[in-house]
Image: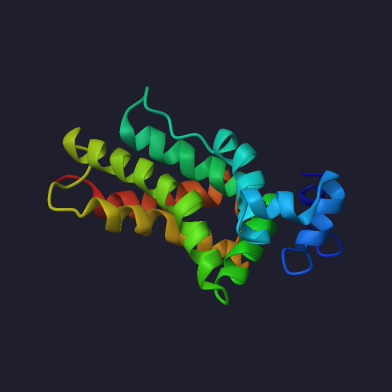
Length: 176
């Protein structure tokens, strides 16, 4: 969707978007949009996910710790640009809209968290992480600093910063 290409400060925002504008841009009726999506946030999530998942891979062909590091680094890199601003807007929009939050969790957060949780479980079974860890909690622990930096702009979102975050987290999670 062309509307998502510029989510900078003076460009597209989820808050400014309307179903009417989406329909006009797509050259279809509002009824057609509503036939496929329940809200503007659902349209944005689907459009965003088409590109996002490919740009933030979760590899299965390397040791789990390496896959986690690569995934978090790619996520931070993507979030450092327009896609990060878009995700921050989606998260903000979801705070006021329970339906949007449910859509965001269903289509974005939950599938990604499950994949990363399986990597954490694999890291535990490979002996890279302690056996007493709760994999879903570790997943949240690994994602939290990136989302914190995204939402509060408290530090850089780049490979060096992500590596530092991952190193600190993984030292505490390492098998002993």
